[in-house]
Length: 468
Image (cartoon, rainbow, N blue to C red; front, side):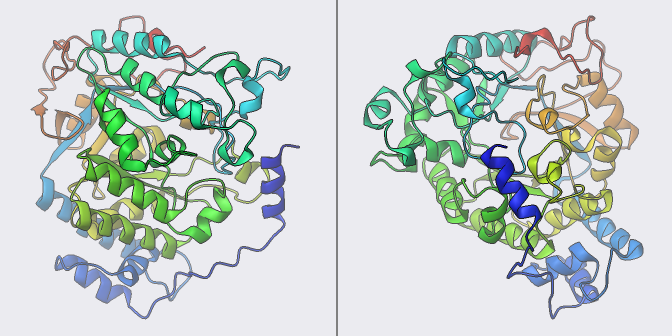
C-alpha cells in the first residue's frame, strides 16, 4: 500500500470534525431578496443560497429553482445571451508528482519514472521538443491557446540556475537531478519557451507550479512569473485552489501550498501584469460554508487585483481517486449542487464577468443546463484532456465548432468564439460551412477535426495530442 493509500485509509477511519459548519443567522428569504436586488452578498447569504436554507435537511427544489432563476437573470444583465468558447488544446507536460493529493488520479508517483524503477505505470513526461511539436501541430489546425497544468516532477526547476541551487539530498526540496529519470522534462522556462510557438497563447503555471519553481531559492513568486513571461507565458490558470480553506486542504491535499500561499502567488501574477482565472473544486469532503468562504476569498482577490477574467467551478470527479477508493467519499456533487454552485458563483462574484460551465466535468446535457443557471462560457475545444479522464470522467476529450454552434443555438443562446482574455470575440453563424476557428494566427475557418475523427467526443482523440 502506497503512502497515499495509507493516508486515505486513515482518513476513512476517522471523523471529519470541521470548525466551519453551514450554519448561519441569516434566512434563505432574506438572502434571496438581496440577490434579487443586486446587493453584495455575505458568506452567510451564500450558505443560505447553496443549502436552500441551512435550517432544514436536504435541498428544497422550489427554492433551488428560485436561486437559478435569479442567477440566470443576473447573467443576462451582466453579459447578455452570448455563450463563449475557445479553440485550444491541453498539453500537460508530466504526470510525475509526489504531492499526494487524495482527490487526484492524474499523477504517477515520481520514483516510477526513475531509470532504475521496475514499476510499470501509465504516465508520461514530455521533452520540450515534444511539447513544441504538439502545440505547433495544433496551431496548424487552428487552435490559438495551449493550456498546460502538470505534476510536480522532482527534476523540474525554473531554469538551470535553479537546478544548481537545489540539493538532491534535502528531502524538503523534492528535487532529483534529471539524470535520475528516463526522460528529462528540462526546466519550466524551456517548456514555456517550447510551447510559445507561432503566436499561440500560453496559459500555464498554476500557483502550485510557481511555488515548485521557487523552492530552495531566494527569489519570490514575482521573479518566477517575470522569468516565464519573458519566454512566452501569457496568462495564469488559478487552479490548485481546490477549496481555499485550510482545514479542508489539510485533509485532501496536505502536501500542497496553503490558502495564503495560493493567494500570494495570484497577487504576484497580477503584480507582473499576467491575467488569470480562478477555480473551485467542490463535491468531496467540504461543506457549503467552505464553498462560501472560498467564493469570498476569490471575490476579495478580485477586489484587490481586478485581474481575474473568469471563474471556473469544477465538480469533483470521484470514481478513480483515493478518496473514493478508500470509502472517504461515496460520490461527487449532485446535479442540483452543481446548479447551485454555478448560480451562487454568479450572484456572489459580482466583480467577475464570466462563469464557466465545463463540459469535460459535467457532460453536454448537464453542461448546457448550467448555461441557464448563471454560466456564460462553455470551455474550449481541448483536443486532449488527461486529468479528468484519469480520475474516471467519461465525457469527450475534444469538441468541434460544429458541436458548439449546434448545442448553444439549440438552447436559444448565441455561440461566440473568443480569445483567452475575452478581448477578441466573433459571433458564429450556425449555418456557416465549413465551420472552424478564425481568431488564431493560422486559423482560417477550417474545422479542427479531420474526417477521420467524430465531431463529438471520442475516447481516442486526435492524433495531434497522442500522449503515449
